[in-house]
Image (cartoon, rainbow, N blue to C red):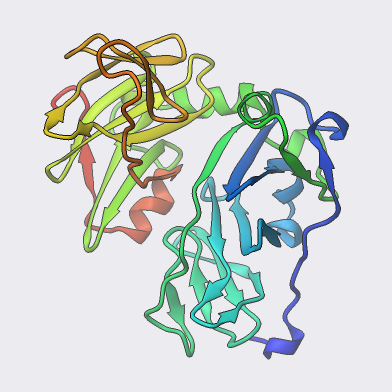
Length: 301
């Protein structure tokens, strides 16, 4: 690998307000919120090899956003590690079916899926993952009207990802898992589990257990966006069903906003769910990184 000074690092381009951005409502974006700032990173702006990884700052937090179209993985990580701020890029190679990141400061290589250092002086360290939502631009704007947009050079529409292509990916496949199956993955220490999205996408909700932790996975009515929450509120374990773009718990009949994890009506109004950290992407990449992963069956759990 090249020395640190020779490694290219890409900085975020000037940002536009939502009303000025040339992004279609059906285009897919990775949305990130840090503190009081929200920003969308269109998939088209991250699609080309030299554009996969962007160094940025939101509300004073240095972050890196990266996407691997091969693995179907998009991530946002903090670039702060102890007292230093890393400059992060991606190598012109893949490892176990996914993009390889590096930092120019120490020339350490980092795993995109989990944020683990896999080679170099920082081996064994992990980047801190930032909450992000893989969704359509129309949905992101409605959730964050004051959002800004990363203005990358972009790619031809045929090379990007829109809502229709996203729906085809989520609905594809049958029988045993295939490389191109879309999964939601969970990792807790040495334990990992994955859920085939096609196994529940028609009903749009899966109540599962990750080890012994109750979790719900919700798919929006337009079949483009997934969110995950823990199902326990205090001492009560809830079971959810989808109702449009709301979740209804069967125990109390309360309605929940799946994006905020907040009950908006019913006996549980005002209560808040705890996020369940998860990963989206193609089965081949998740399995390659988590060889002992367990497949969760929502029909059983």
